[in-house]
Image 1 (cartoon, rainbow, N blue to C red):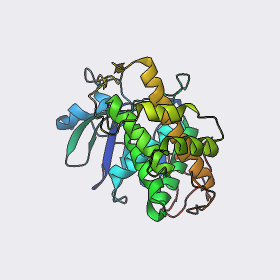
Image 2 (image 1 turned 180 degrees about the vertical axis):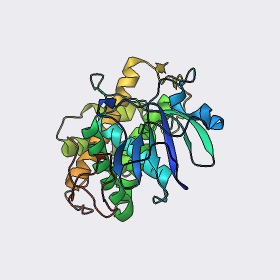
Image 3 (image 1 turned 45 degrees about the vertical axis):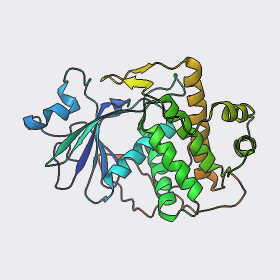
Image 4 (image 1 turned 120 degrees about the horizontal axis):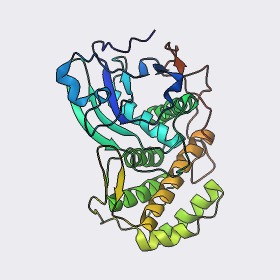
Amino acid sequence: MINESKIDLGDKLFLFFQFPYDYSGGLPVSLMEGVDLISRPYPEERAELRYVLPQLNLVGVGVPHACIRISSMHTERDCLFWTIIFALQLVKPLHIGVSGWLTDKVSALLTIITVFRNNKDLDNYCLADLEEAMRLVAKIGGIKRCNRNNGILTGLNILMSVTNGQSTSFFMLYNALFSALEALYETGRGSDKARRLRERITSYLSENFEWIEQEYKSGRNPSSHGVSDFWTDKQGNLSFSVTDEQYKKLCELHKIACETILRYLETEILPYNNSSSMCLKPSKGPIVTTGQIPLITSSERPSSPIK
């Protein structure tokens, strides 16, 4: 059984003040070897850490949720955690609030919440969603390890940063999403960039994106840096000083970028031609289990895509 209340030497816990999960199935949940979703990040007698622990019901922090514990067997734990958050957003774009992290010796506060929710009808995450997300984590790890195309990796990194709430400025998010699309679709330089972007997105996703050419011409401004047009309170509620139309544009651009990444993970076909740039090995078994840790190695890259 997973020990929920013990931090082993080298473990790192990432804490949530908002994690929309169906807790009726119970915790802990093992996401992969050395990575667990748990409900009690540390014994409550550690009073010096109470300011960062979500289960203590501090004013302004919110109700108890959960945390992800990553063991010392993973050398790049911060990168792995944010990849998991990004993958969860690809599965369902729900608001996730990260309040801090801690180890057996140190702790730090964070106030980060994802800003996109492309479908207001989406419910909480469930166990199947966690499994889908971890399959994507394995595939994204494969891209980073054996990538043969800088455009895919650049676009992926930009999209991850945007999706994980690294900026709260409309102009920064707007330009970053277009930068991600430019990298993913290799639009190059020149006056025809807007047309090429529209043609390649339309062809790759098999939908009509005529509007994006004009949007690129009229709205894309690489010199814009903007100000904090979005902000979140400590409960994770979004407040906007941008218009509904502007936010809708952000959501549409974000959706296109996410669908591009998902299609690439499914087909391995580059967004701008019909060649394959990498090979992924099929899944050899379940990735998510409750109560025990599955024996999954880093070389096993499941191939089941998110629909």
